[in-house]
Amino acid sequence: MIKDNRRSMAELKRLRILGRNFVYNPRTVRHVELDPGIWHRVGLMMKKKKEITGEIEAIPELAHVLEVPQEMPGMNDPPGLRNLILQVSHACNLRCVYCSADFGRYGGGFRSMSSRTAERAIDFLFDTSSSKELAITYFGGEPLLNLETVLSSASYARGRAAKKGRALALHLVTNGVLLCPKTLFQLDELGFSLTVSMDGKKACHDRCRPFPDGRGSHQTISRALEIAGELPIGGRITVRGTFTRQNAAFFPDIRFLVHRGFSRNIAYEPVFLPTSHPLSLRWQDLPGVKQAYVDLARHYVKQWRRGEPFCFWDFDDAITRLACSTPRRSRCGAGVSTLAVTAEEELYACHMSTGMESAKLGNLQEGLIKNLGKPWQERYLEGRTGCAECWLRGLCGGGCNTHALFFNKSLGQPYKLECELIEHRYRLALWILSEIPDLRETITVDSGIGGADSGHLLSPLWSTRKAAEKIGN
Image (cartoon, rainbow, N blue to C red; front, side, top):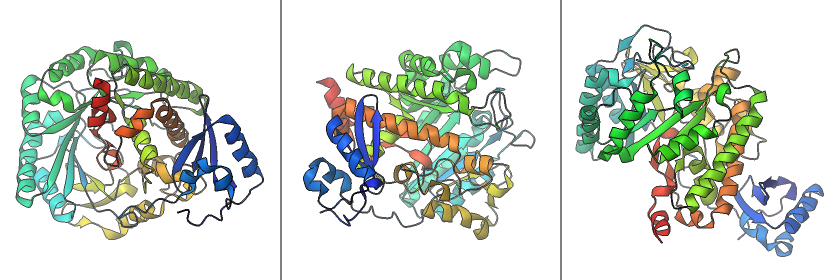
């Protein structure tokens, strides 16, 4: 049944991506691939702003794109708190040249979170949230510098979850330097998943992520990842890199990570720094960055066809959304479904916004201060005003809150350079879906990524049962 079909053809978005032609409907978040002749015909109709009435009979391929899907339950409800980020160590044992967190200090001194504060934060999560599924992420600085608090509070959280009958995901983001076998076994016992930072090849990584004395950290972290790969926790590790304007053509570094085999889960993200910083991305860097994503998309397809697939966070997320036509209220749950807690028991919208006065939303003693959190809730439910005309608004969700706040001083306007990258990745995800027709069959609404609420990988596409069956045949 086509609902409300008296719409203009001009609403549709035509896309040509690496030789393939698509039509996408921003209103229904659905797409279809068309042969060149029909694609051009749709273009002519769009120019004439013809109404859709009767065109489904003329171009039946458009029926799926125009059909309004059923609204997902809860889409219009404000989400509750689900994910808490514990900043257990405001200190770091590396001196990464692009660090925007002042090596974990966020403008203060080096300090650590006590076990008591961590437990109070966990109590706050369990007592505030009504969700049956909760997540706790340990962050820093370097959280393993405060391993005692990590382990004791994680054990405490597991106990509370068991008593309350609630599912709990534990995650830890680390630079990997302190991942010795004993620590890996302790984290595995508690069911942690890990994100370990590595920027790619040795030269690239060591240039960006040195020890305080200037030595590179690549060899130390490589060894830790090799050991982790031999243990059960190795299957729950994501390797995450950062690219800057120095390695805007970053594809060789991701290819290195994929083929080195540290993990089949890869996240590789652009640096976001003040525009005056020498490593910050500029608009003139975009051609090189976009070509790197094209090279990566081709490699993603090649590896899938060879039976050696890997997960690239941003592609998997976009592929899942496109395949399921799943609208996204927001790309970022900061200040709404996600909060960060500092060693001083202050509540911030997320770890990246720590220290920003406009992102400070309360403390553990008083809880969330309602008037401070209201703009974040409203933005989550109503979207960014700056996204209103974007064709991707229904799937993207508006980018990062902290980036909007930092670069535009407003939650309402997305950071445009980030928008360019998100749009490019979605275009390539469309192409990947067409290049691997059987990939769509492996995807369900529950497939893919933890996303904004958790910030880490839950069920990458390569690990789905159907994908494994197809690869095995």
